[in-house]
Amino acid sequence: MFVRNTMPMHRHPLDPADRSMLGRDASAAVARYLDFRGNGVGTPLRMLGGLARELGLGALAVKDEGGRLGLGSFKALGGGFAVAQLVLEAAEEQLGRRLGYADLAAADVRSLASTMTFACATDGNHGKSVAEGAAAVGASAVIFVHAHVSDARVAAIARHGARIVRVDGSYDESVREAARVAAREGWTIVSDTSWPGYERIPLLVMQGYTAMAREALAALDEPPTHVFVQVGVGGVAAAVAACLAETLGEQRPVFVAVDPARAACMAVSAAAGHPVAVAPGEPTVMAMLDCFEPSPVAFRVLSRVADAFMTVEDEDAVAAMNRLARPAPGDTAITAGESGAAGIAGVMVAATDAELRQALRLDGKSRVLAFVTEGATDPDRFRALTGLDP
Ligand SMILES: Cc1ncc(COP(=O)(O)O)c(C=O)c1O
Image 1 (cartoon, protein in one colour):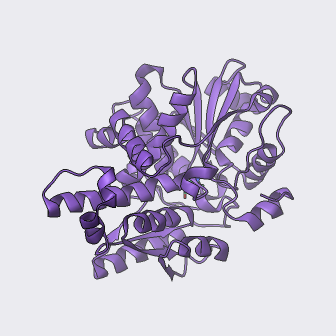
Image 2 (cartoon, protein in one colour):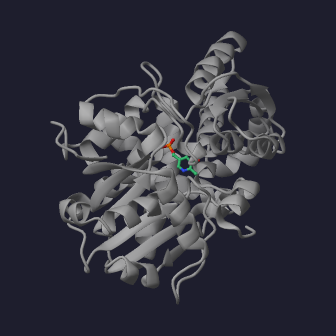
């Protein structure tokens, strides 16, 4: 499925609230948080010249998020940043003084944080980020996981001291259950998806993701001409696209949002011109992208700053994982999980399809940027799909 963005808001300015939380200043605040967390240098940007040549592209830059904050995925940026920000805001109100990220280590701020509980629903990676972020500031976390989250992923979350609650049903059902229980218990929900009346915290999570765009631009000699980002509920695609558009203005790249064909909530919404839920079907191998309702905030942002929406099949993601793990001559090998490889799968599909190449104006001069959003966060899956040890 390929959908060109013909929505009326395409390339219109962002809403002021979205702009203030996803623009250049917002990403600078995240960089200060990452400095405090000891991740000031960020993640590596790999130039895959061999794969670019194979695909008939000028250059292919891949930001490898597998090592982010030791959590295995870019999601480490979002939940943890939102928790830190919410603790600081509560502490500023209670203590009556302005605070910076370094104050998260102060005894009175940690004492206040120890009274706060943060909750969320997760496919795996977001929950790990909230759990780790809460532990880092001395707060508690309760993480809701749906029926298809593997035991390995649950164990990786529990390792950060969070309480785990299993929910029957899909990701979207776990989101609703987490919201219901948190309202009853007085916990703060730190969701990576938004819903009507609940936008600020998901925007804080998305603000955390803008670090990827900021770091990528800083590492590149020239801005990219094309950017491909995979979509679960759309938060990361919207954050990266918004930050690039706000930072680069008219020089912004062609932005392509990449959905799994089996959970194409954003592509289907783009075709409809408004957010729609798709019917859950056979689970996609891209387990972290198995979402059936787009985040309304992400849709609002992407309707303005995405230029196209496309889908990739499960076998495309597996082919991308294998291409990254067994690279073209001269390229560095990258360990990508199934969802982590989905953006590159989008690049590989688009670059090798004559119609898509033309529609996206991809050619031998294109400088493409994509994100490996996770490493082998489920090592057994990685072994099964690549025949390699992570
Ligand atoms: C590795 C990975 N990539 C991409 C995504 C998609 O992010 P979003 O749900 O913000 O679209 C996720 C979401 O959990 C993820 O874990």
